Structure formats: C-alpha cells, structure tokens
Amino acid sequence: MKLTLRIWRQDGQNGSGRLVDYKMDDVSPDSSFLEMLDLLNEDLIESGDEPIAFDHDCREGICGMCSLTINGIPHGPERMTTACQLHMRHFSDGETITVEPWRAKPFPVLQDLVVDRSPMDAIQQAGGFISVRTGSAPDGNAIPISKEIADYAMDAAACIGCGACVAACKNASAMLFTAAKSSQLNSLPQGKAEKDRRVLSMVASMDEAGFGNCTNYGECQAVCPKGISLDFIAQMNREYAVASVKQIFGRA
Image 1 (spheres, rainbow, N blue to C red):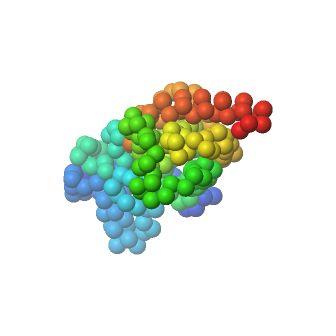
Image 2 (tube, rainbow, N blue to C red; image 1 turned 30 degrees about the vertical axis):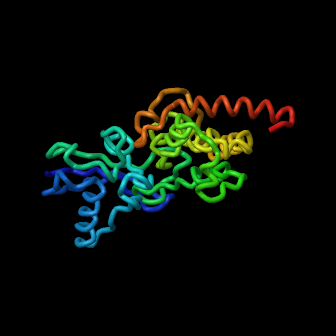
Image 3 (cartoon, helix red, strand yellow; image 1 turned 45 degrees about the horizontal axis):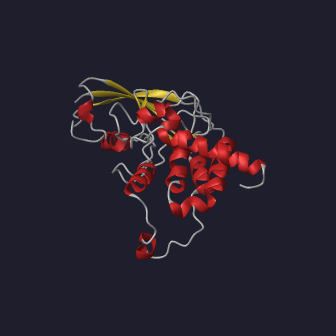
C-alpha cells in the first residue's frame, strides 16, 4: 500500500503545531496502525530527522495509551477498536490519513501526538478505592453477588481510561469515564460504604480539571473502544443527586 500520512508535529507544550505530510510505500495491509508508525519512525531516524512521538504500551487494546485521532475519529474508523488494534487493511491504497492528538483543553499536547491525561488519573484517585477488607479470594466470594450485578460492574470495569470519550465530545466531557469508574465500585456491596463520598469526590475532581458537562450527544459511547454505555452516566447522575441532598443535610 502507498499512503500519505498527514501528522501533527508539535515541539513541546508551548510550541506551535502544524500538520506535516509523509509519504510511505510498501505498507503491509496486515500491519497495525502503530506498527506502521514504527516503520515511519525508522525511516525518519535513518534520514536524521526527529521521530514522531506517540503513546503506546501494551498494544493489546487494554492499556488505553494509544490516544490518536485518525481522520477525525478517536482511535480511527473501526468501532470498538483501539488504534493499536486497527489494521491498515481498513484503509485504501493511495489514501491520505490525517493523524492528530486528542483535542481537549484538559489534555494539553506535550509533544507531537502525546497528550497529558493526568487529570483522568486524578479523577480515579478521588474515588477509586474501598475501605472494607476484602480478604483473600474465598473471603471475597463469601459475599453473595448476583450474576446480573457482577456482569454490570464488569462492563463498567472494562473502561481502559484512554480518553476517546473526551476527544469525541463537543464539550470535552469526561462523564463517561467518570461514570464507569464510579459505577464499577458503587454497584458492588464492597463499594457501598463510601458510595456517596466517591461520586461527590470524583465529580468534583472532574469539574476541577476543566472537563465539560454531558449534553447527551452520544459521541462518547460511539467511539469508546470498549463499548461503555451511557447507562452508567445516568446511574452516576442519580447517585450524585442523592449524595448532594445527603450532603446538604450532613448525611453524606
């Protein structure tokens, strides 16, 4: 395959970014998108140019690091697929592919395609804990949990924190991420003890970081590589409303 890659290059957080075109020949249709970028970087290094900075870790679709906007879509055109698992056969020979970093105020560009997503870590740290002792695995299994609730919590836990929901949202909202992380623990009996404190703290951290609010466009769910449902946002909104009222009366 022959491709033209139009890639965002930015030298540091305060640098002025620009799109730069790169020509590639003999790209294997079976290579992943990140493998294709690896080959491009090898060519750039051999020619004495600065390689393109981009995030990656597991390359198995579970770490959430490959934060690339490909042709205007976070993670690219394939549904429920991370950029590291996107293969070049989904593009056409001779196509021009535009690659940019996440575009959101809470995600400043550090260099090229790398953004600072530490605000999402702060949200998770605000409520990603439980105070009860879970003990060993047999002790944990002693707490009866229905399969329906367990499956629901596991659906929320599937969130890899990549930030695609933020990048796709017109408001740069992190509601889907925050809702998934709060619902994961709030749905289980082990997390009920601090349910109110958790949702209040995580939403406060989200607002403090400068993420926007949810207006139910649904882009977040559409681009989520793990298919996280808007139902979790509805759950978080209900829990936040209840916790806010309890806080007013000193019960949260």
